[in-house]
Length: 383
Image 1 (cartoon, rainbow, N blue to C red):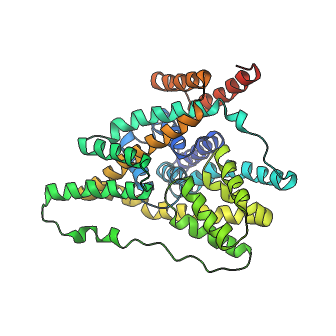
Image 2 (tube, rainbow, N blue to C red; image 1 turned 30 degrees about the vertical axis):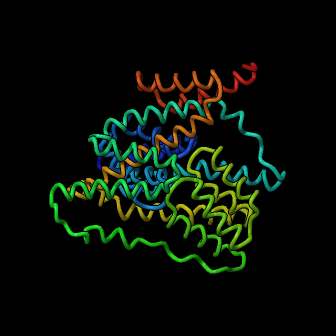
Image 3 (cartoon, rainbow, N blue to C red; image 1 turned 120 degrees about the vertical axis):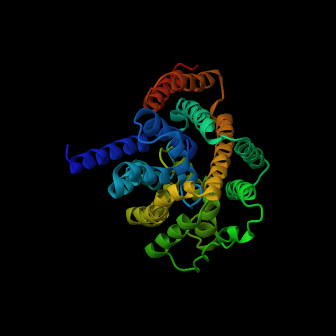
């Protein structure tokens, strides 16, 4: 096969993989990462766990939705620049179209369709999937007592109310400091100077409702936002409810709820609120503004990841970020499990999914679809 034919085959593979993950990726970033690992590391062998963890750590060092940034990284790794664009778009597009349809129904009928019962069987399967990913990635990422201690500290401090960004960068800087001390006990504090001057751009000034302001506001949020969907909620409320007065609290909460019950990244909540404010053009511009920075940041940093690994203290920092990421992932999994495993059937589904992933090479997509079907059947039978 010619080089162009091989590249075209890889690009089609990227599109097929991430379209499917975009349609079945329920459960938030931790679940998405677990599904991606099953697909591209375990089943397809695009890369190994070590490289996968490096990319995961790199996504935690830049703003934006981590799972979407992972698809962009992985698309580039598999199919170059076309794969970078196709990977991210393929993952986001299904969720955006689903959210757009729900937004249309919301505007037309004034309420969201009930969807909780649909996820009764999906959510525990997702818990099993995340637990398996944590089990596998933890054996690779927590490869020293220091890394294990950082991961455990991140887990404990998260539940104590510590800021997620502080935990990620704190873990990285502690690991880097230990490595610098070990190699060069008197290394100057100037080594950390690049991290001490980080600041966020100033907020936009108040302006009347317009497509341009909608796009620029979402672009600003996408360019500076670290952390979970709860952090996204805080940013959206500050701009669209408090500063601009374009949305009510209830509308904003409904937008976040739609992002949570649909597959793909939670950031597609921007699609929903954009449609509420300005129809289809608003939905498209809000989504573009929210996600465009991720493509730019990944394109700018992808080639730097091997250099991070090659540098002793930057590699140590990356190990610390990875350890903190795994600790946060474990904390989020515990929270999700509390809301998803609510009875004996859901506990059984979670355990079954974990066991199948541990013992077989089953495609997680089939587990998600099987969990949905089984959950509907159990509810229909009143079990």
